Length: 238
Figure 1 (cartoon, one colour):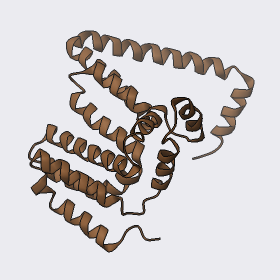
Figure 2 (tube, helix red, strand yellow):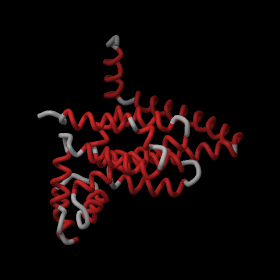
Figure 3 (tube, helix red, strand yellow):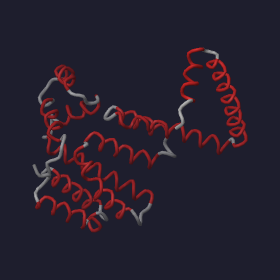
Figure 4 (cartoon, one colour):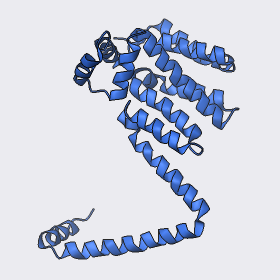
């Protein structure tokens, strides 16, 4: 089965090629990103049929039935809830177009926030290279939109960043490791404010870590089984 017809690929190519024209204005930007979403509906992407079945399965259910039916799918709770609410008002096609539009707009906002001059070029490069993955990995695409906004506000609104990451985690758990960026920001702020104290803490951690490691090495080396294993591995020259 072909990925898409020549006509669909040509339309998508023209939309991306003309994006420098329609990205400059908010209204045309929304229309252009929506048209990309519409065009992608004519592609035979993997996983989309499963997303569609999931959407249809949650349509016209009561909340009690929703809690039962959602157990048949391996999707996170907030994504299920999003689909459950959306299915009461729109069809899957509109739901799909809304996701693609929102994601692409978030990407452009992210690029523009860091470099107004390179925003259009960055958008074209990312969409051209990654549109295939954006188009069918819906949950990952949604959390990537969250991530784009998170990086915009990261240094200014730590608590909002935490709540956005928490919401995004219940859409797709793939974003969970990004919670570490909050810790890194806190460490960065602390080291800037308390430079001398930070150096002292780092040296103390290094000293105690070294002492603990040596203690464990000495302890484990006394164990006959572990001592035997270590000697065996030392015989092999890697």
